[in-house]
Image (cartoon, rainbow, N blue to C red; front, side, top):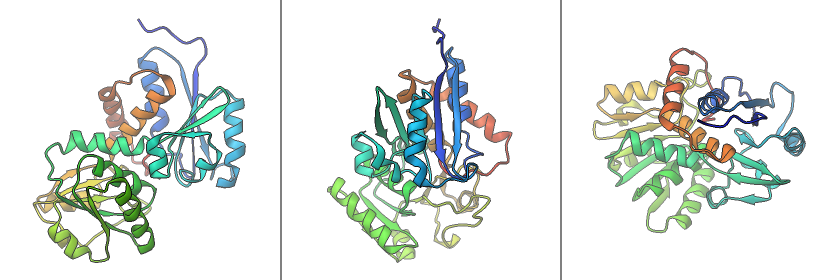
Length: 296
């Protein structure tokens, strides 16, 4: 029997436009399943009419109110680093933090996004061809997904972004971290897709607020696998189109769940039941038509 905590564990999420996030529900439900109370607070910059400049005050308030940790999402994943005492190796390599542990007056930054995508991919596309892949998107989510797929053994990665400098910077950074892989930035999407075995989509395109598909449908072929990060809706236009064209697909739900699995482990010191959290996530998404802002 799990011993019940005398005081609830407290955590929170800092970001902008996060009212639709399923992270609080996943954490609280898993805490309840393990026999302890878990308070999880949404700290929405938009709702509070704040900007990321308020991060120092929000972190101090979280410490004063006894929070054990914070999840961090857009637009604060890079900015929060300046206010932390220590970083995990992955967070330092990625230059982004999505989980902060508050302990004994110190702040420890971690990144569970990359592991969330890697674990989702490993389970959802276990025998995917990792010879060559194209990634669309070089922002905060794209840094995590690229790091993840290269950690899984991808040999060749071509990065595209509307901002060519951002794509080039990501390719250069990852080339240092993964010298055995060939990582390039390119503007020739059609040529890259022609020689790729898979596609990673790491932009907001496909959300209710950003409808559409991030590439011409004719570039998708049956030999491609397609991995998505958007999870509101789970079935994006990209995934619908890819299925119709015979591709194997992976929705963004797994990344959302497994980043929460990693954060729960860090916050509580307990091992979460990943399958139980996935089932809970499935029940939440099947009963919801909300549109989320981020992988958190």
